[in-house]
Length: 194
Image 1 (cartoon, rainbow, N blue to C red):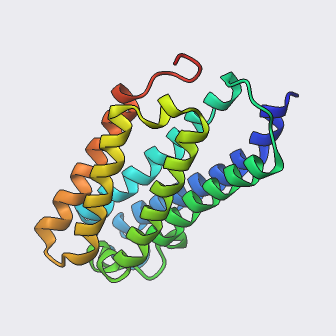
Image 2 (image 1 turned 30 degrees about the vertical axis):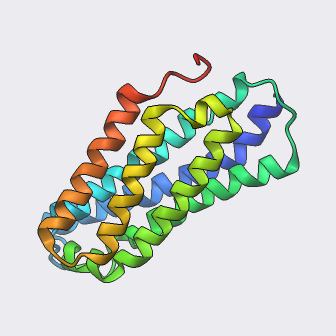
């Protein structure tokens, strides 16, 4: 096992726990929608953000592979940074989605009650993502698609924090999800390819 693989073991476990958390909650929601347990109402804003978080978790793990292609010295600080990033993503998932959807009857109301925490964690995660990108190289961190993605997301998060209008929240969530999908499929090269 090389240094990269060794470093990514704990990071992968944390991301795996976050994915397990999200998928378990979605499974619990499906059971409730089928009539087992308390009724639940799932709305588009909430589902868009759940999709966004799922994509970020999977994309994070995939694009950290870029570190393997870089000629660099692994330090304890870099190791801790990657663990911090993974923990931040885990917390974003937990803030958005309670364990097994306990306490949620209406997903939109639940989201709006905790939106400041969610958007705050999201902004922290975006800041860590910027640092992560620059650790992979100046050219990686200054790619126009990445700069546009981060800038747009900061604006969307600020709008999401302050707006209480449902239509605005739907647009913020839908645009964020669309941007996450676009960057995942078209905006980033495969790891090690550039």
